[in-house]
Length: 155
Length: 417
Image 1: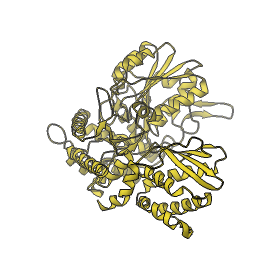
Image 2 (image 1 turned 120 degrees about the horizontal axis):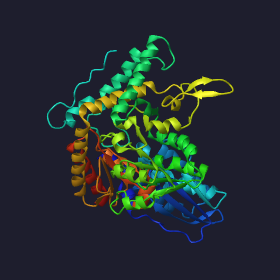
Image 3 (image 1 turned 90 degrees about the vertical axis):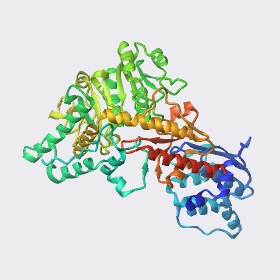
Image 4 (image 1 turned 135 degrees about the horizontal axis):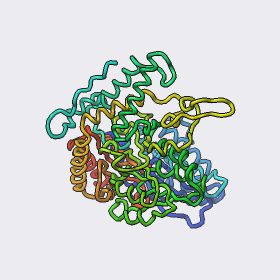
């Protein structure tokens, strides 16, 4: 099944099985939970900001291969980025997986976007788009949340 | 009225042939390779139902219970005829014990919002079970918060069936209502509702049974069962969406106040005082889903023509085949359904999340449900965030189970290579 392999690429299966940065940060500067009531997936994002820069980012939770791999890859590309860069990446990534209008991406982030590219296979699976974006929505909530501990729901 | 032609799909000795029966369901003509294993969410519709609804709109349509002209009288007659078909389907004593609602959820909410405040006071208890669908949990939570009653939950046993002694231990003179499923939608566990009713009545509690998953699969006789309320939905018994049924014992319905006000449910209205109609019309405010009721009647005719004993035999045989076939897949665990599982196979495939399972097997043409099946407390208790659920209908046979098993093997292979 060729089309399935476009969704479940090796990198997705690998990150789904062996997620990176799958841990809590003991004293995060920001945190938020994401919940997809449709499938019961839950994710907690931990952030440690040093000024405007993401010194550390990690996650915990349970979910499908897509949502686990999405969270794992997200934490990998975000380490060391500024908050503005993280937001630019999310905006671009979100447009890529939902088929929305793509915003201009700074040249410096092109390589990171390439790393996220395998996840854009969900575009062909409307019911699964939320799996790929759940952790990003939680990240955004963590960054913007007035309360240090907020929950976003995809439904 | 020209009666919609109703071929006998159940012809042939000893049971029916699901493959032949599929010809009665146009969805399979439009989707020839569809392996539909999601009837617990909603069943597909036979031609007899689809045609009956279209025919009604073409030839007999008018509003009910108001026009003096013949067409309206005809429409009213058909609507009330559908009510009598439901009465026969449940073997209720009288048609006025049948209230048309939107679905099972609305039926349960009707009881909660009408019977609840009229008969419950602070400290009274409503007893449900861990097997319930959210629709038999949340209406009681709303009522609990409003009336300061207690919501008590009977546990399941280690096998996933209702723990009868645990249930009995939670009954007391404070128990005013037992609200319980007949077959658990998330696991397929069949509850011994006869025993539940007997025990509950011993304590003076009324009993509401959620028959959403039972009515498509086995014969229900509310008089033999002795329950006080029985709820089911049309779209799971091969009927249309938007129509459901609340059966309520006549004396109970007669003592219950209206829950929604409007036309169709009143005897007279002045600005000072309004007199309500007797049940069932008291509970059917506004223009009802007339075509839905008539379509439901056609669906019940379809079921009766197949034979409810034969449907049960078919579901039992195929459930057994499914359990046997799926159990042979390495890493697959069926979630417990007690001593009697019927029509529903809910499972975990090691190392593959249910949503990934559902996406992958969908590409093999197999439609199943993945998630918590609106029964989050049950799955939490069993230690699952989500499961994959395959559920059966009259059009399924061994080949569908084989296709599911093959697709599951492919999913496993993809994740374990």
